Image 1 (tube, rainbow, N blue to C red):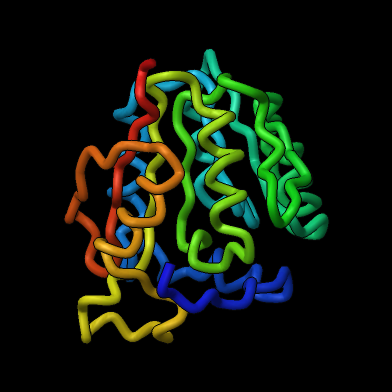
Image 2 (cartoon, rainbow, N blue to C red):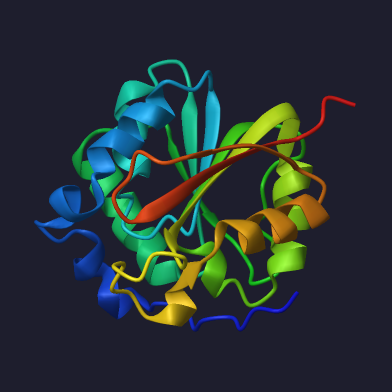
Length: 196
């Protein structure tokens, strides 16, 4: 759809996800507050990595569960170990495929993808799997570095424009609801699965 796909950040980059400066640079605290404000019982973090968002989400979802999806078994091992260390029993690791997130059908309230969609080698197939996994009225929260902003110092292949993200996700059957602008470097795009 007119976009070059980036390579996947491997598990050897896991420390970068947990860097001490991440909250200050990306205001991940604001994103977490936004996510916790969504009405959700079953959530899925696609490209979960080390569980940076999945674990705090699980801590706060007392009556729900977090599905942590990744294609790298090494990342899932890190997620599983960290969840066990914290005594979190509501984190479920899922070994996804490059063309299928392996979500349960029509069971997920909110899907989160943070800085990973641009790396999907099969974005159309992945989105089809996400749409299948979302319940009617369920939402996708897509977070990507803003390509429109020259002051976002991330490699071009690791950024997306709002227009490109909307084009690709709507083509998969989700409706764009809003683009939130509370993060310093990233778009927060919210999409919804039609109720019918």
